[in-house]
Length: 390
Image (tube, rainbow, N blue to C red; front, side, top):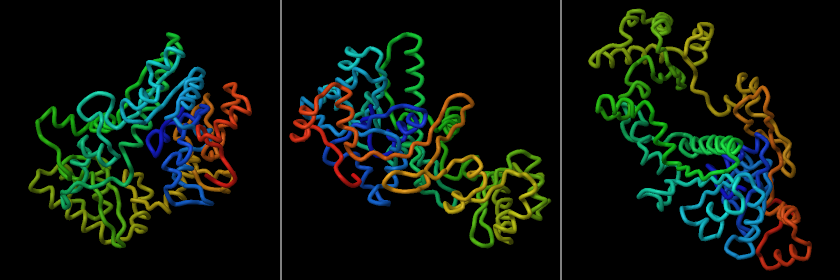
């Protein structure tokens, strides 16, 4: 049972759907998941929504009604997992909190997926990815020496990382249930996940007391062997020649062999080394550097544009962005499950549910009659999908 919306929770449950879970998406009858309206749209279907909601079933039900809450309780009685993304206390007000549902179904795994968790002074604050990254300290170390202001990452790191974290936690709880016969409650915070990503920054701070700032840590450009360099045509190369053998060979290939013994130059000389490398890399285009460096098997890679990623031969060989024939939409590129299993089966779901498309089907499964379903629909307790995309 998936009570989540927008990106973090749906990304988590999409991963579970890829692994074979029957995910029932619980939506509000009139608007549904806000992500349904996020552009760009393809044949009236949101492409972002399509990316993280394929293969799910949609039950549109008004959770503020007693009858809607009864439907949820009946469904939870048969469910393995509940994932909810409301603020703390909302599920209790809806009569669908863990304490109540687990009394009916002791095997239930219940994951509360919230911004700041169920406890602590931030628990009731609203927030989005940028806020979580800010409060977790990620933005304080994101940037470069020549632009020491915080930089917004190009992907919602906290949201997506917490989606993986939630899926991992749920699978761990299911494994626990296999051993004990009982489910459990999971309090998963996007902010907590973001803090956990500061592995290297926190290690430095705890060990030395030095506070990392943009451009002054090993992974943000303080050393010339781990940095970004612009090419003659305005493109960029990522250089990560951490191992001395790679550094020495790179210096030879760029025409600066005198830098071979200056990989870890002191602060005063470090800038000069970086400036020399920057000047060398600006002498040739990205294509020219690719020809020179391509056969050397060095940890140097082009900063690729989106159009280049989708046609990348490695991405193609790994099957990461397959074409799916989505009913009502046509053939579109989607994201495959990002792990390969030798035994477990992963799928690439194609169908994108309309809001309330499976309401009648699910209610019949729960024992509701056609007359009862019709009455609930007329009174707005449930929503059913009409003609056209929704």
